Image (cartoon, rainbow over all chains, first blue to last red; front, side, top):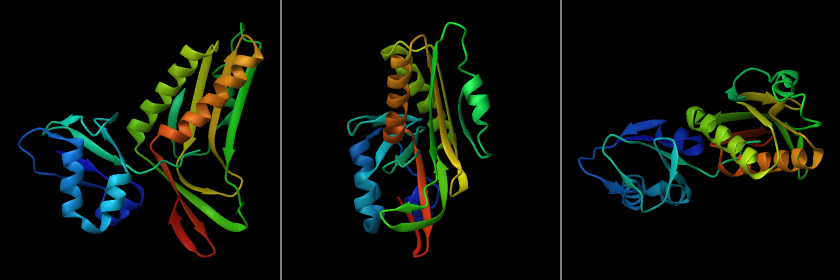
Length: 78
Length: 132
């Protein structure tokens, strides 16, 4: 699956990465995996909302291997 | 009209897009770049968006306004990239047969935008830069 990062996370981790996954995982599981991979950014990863294919998801939503997942930090438009 | 753009916003065009002979009121909101925030000076801002999703969310907010208030047309345009003090970051225009719905719909749109639309700003000030 493709993961997109924005704002501070985008600067620190890069704008996008290809995350190896062969089966469906939940948003919670993805948060855990990313937190393990980027322990310094654990707090930010937990604070983000998550969008799958441009729609907001909940922690229980399942992510398929070919989905595009965006980590959405607290927004500040306007 | 729902758009994320990189150029200055044509405010007149956004307002014209909600004109309707059956509407007696148009309410507009403009968000502009403020120099002082709690005594701290901003030099300029840089906005970033998840553009495709942000445009979808603007459309969704417009649909919610039309469903929840007696409004006829909604347009929301947000600018991204570098914006200097006084420049316009967002323009919302809502038309309705009567003014009360126009005010309510416009207020709803900006509050919801600040809650769900994936746009971020980085503030550049005297003391460096940080995401807000």
